[in-house]
Image (tube, rainbow, N blue to C red; front, side, top):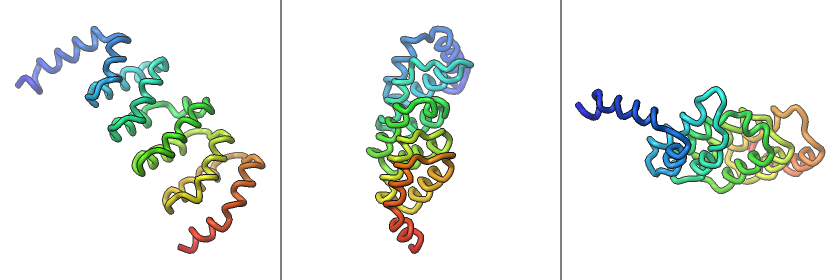
Length: 169
């Protein structure tokens, strides 16, 4: 059978042999999620990840396909986000404008990275706008932080009543 037989495997080998940066770019831009998955895996599978494609991967996170967005979010190494306050601000902006499913994926990713003071502060400010699950995850993120700056602690203090209300319900 063509779809599952030797032709499919030969097409894969040809694609691998002729893949280059131009093809990767085209696959990242494609509306075909299979092409996007292949490009993500290709860019991040090597010993030295191809971070020149990071903007293309970040664009997928903000795209229409929640499954592909979550896939790339899971695949990007946590150290990439830990090392960049700019990327942490960006991922928080994604959280703020996303649906609940992607918000949950972002919070899961945040559990794997070292959070900047700026992001910890933004998390504190968001506590009042969360449901119980998000609230608990955010408090866990704050609890895991080795140190909290004075401004983060001060912001947390503003939410003591929120903590009490959430604990009672």
